[in-house]
Length: 310
Image (cartoon, rainbow, N blue to C red; front, side):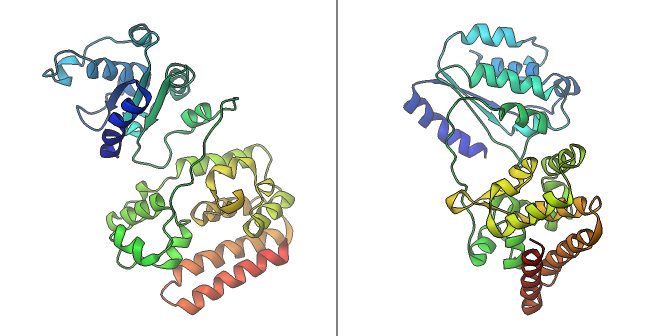
């Protein structure tokens, strides 16, 4: 990730004719508690450090400098620039005031003309507060680039050095490289903390607390597994989906099985039992991966059951 930002920095500078500000939370020192409480000041101090004239100075000698958003805004004035932040999640993990932090980034480095912002992260999401604000509706055009998927288990096993990776596991993680990679880390280190739960749990909770989960809405949600129609999906769950050909949404079972499992607790009648069975069948599909025939049989019954319900 750091290498990628280092590589694109000179290319962006040449193409856009803008100054590059490269900030990293990957080294220098551990993040202090006050930085978690005031991420704007933490970022501004690192911006000032990277802009120093004395390149031999160490960050520790700069750690008591008082740099505010006002200082950075006044320093930049109308300068064309690109802000690159390496491993932003290190700063934002457990941080407060993320909404204000997002507002500062948006107003200073996105809304102004000839200003740009990009970041790398160890995890798929940063924080709900930041992403919600940064993704808020506006009239700016957005280019959506489809992320590459890993279509062949042999290639994926080689790339991620996961020798016993199966097709079932790839399907479970939506063929998404980041999820497959983090799943492998979780498996080899016996630490589930690598997989992204925060955004998923927040989306599920929003569905439940705003009254979106009903028998009717869940039946519609199940139908989207077959149709890919985004109108059938509860809005907070859109970010847990992948976009396929013709802009049809595709389930990422790693996310959706957890959502259905949670939703089943509030359903009534036969649908409650059916949804629990559907979740169980897909888990069986993954768990029976070394019994290939039984695994695919579970997926067939899973799909057939959704057909019958919808």
